[in-house]
Image (cartoon, rainbow, N blue to C red; front, side, top):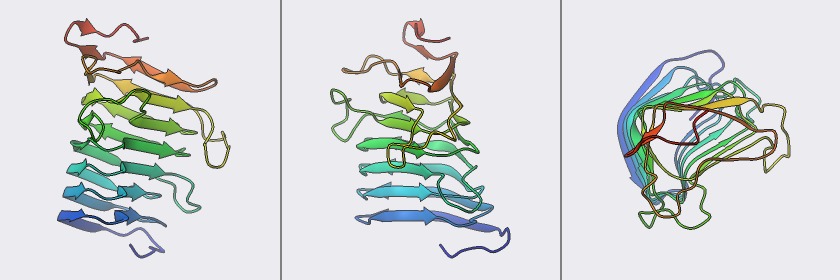
Amino acid sequence: MFAFSTPQMGIFSNISGANNFRLIHAHNFSEYLGFSNVQADNNVIGVEIESGNVTFSNSHFRFNTIGIKIDGRASQNPCHGSFNGGSANHNVHNLVVQSCGLGEVFNGVDFLGDQGGGITKDSVGIQIYNSRGITIANGQIGSNIEVGAADPVTGLSSSNGPNALFNNYIRSDLSNFIPPRLESGAILLKKGNYDASGLVPWND
């Protein structure tokens, strides 16, 4: 997408694509863009958001290397948008967030399995590094989660802070599922998450 020098509005819907490096890449200001009904399959990256108040609704990212990537290191208007409904299922990494200091909300988005359909041993389907305000709520989680204080690329930890996992249905029945892994200094608030047996034992 082209660079916006002032806040703009744009609506994009009914986009599907496969076999790209990135199907969608929102960078620079990218303010107030709205996407709906996106289907990204078999790309290296389904969607990468670097900046702006970009929203997605009813969008599905499947069989990509990275389904959704939030990269807050952009020098202009760092990312602070939302995803509502949809899924990032069966990617190698369903969600990767790096150095996002203004927050990103995933509401009712499912994150299930890896490309083989289950959870591979030691896989990390959801990675959140050097970020704060990342909220995953009201969806179905079947991915291992790792939250780290430092960005693995830059080594920076200046954006690290609380992230949240609220009211999700946890697919703990999947083989190799483990509770969220927190690196030293990382913060994850966990409330109201449940599985078939009720509240999961690792809630705060």
